[in-house]
Image 1 (cartoon, rainbow, N blue to C red):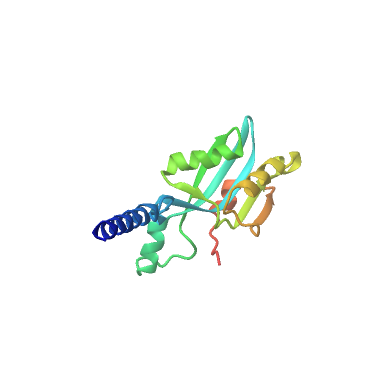
Image 2 (tube, rainbow, N blue to C red):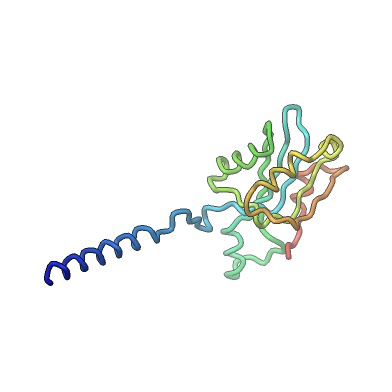
Length: 158
């Protein structure tokens, strides 16, 4: 009987150890490790695309909520890249900002006139395949201004 009790306790301890090890947060993402992309502007370049990405500055938002700032709109920074493919722009953002890009909060996609005339199928395909990207964001064509100027306009997202 004593052997059965020891075996039972050992099995219970092993089972508890497995639950402790296997219940960890393997793919956790801290908020300060994520670049929340609110807007993307894209147009044709000589070789590939010129992409501008509007990313939230989290520290500026936290100072606004603590009473530090009285600005209107969301504090953002605009990154600009010239890349061979649109998917490379997402990778370049990860490298330049030391944060992983997250498109789940994207509100607007500004497409330059030249790219709109040649077709946007490849661009929209990336949005379909990227997990966490919403379907209901706005898509605009931009004629007179370049994409970066459109993304730098102050706008209150709501």
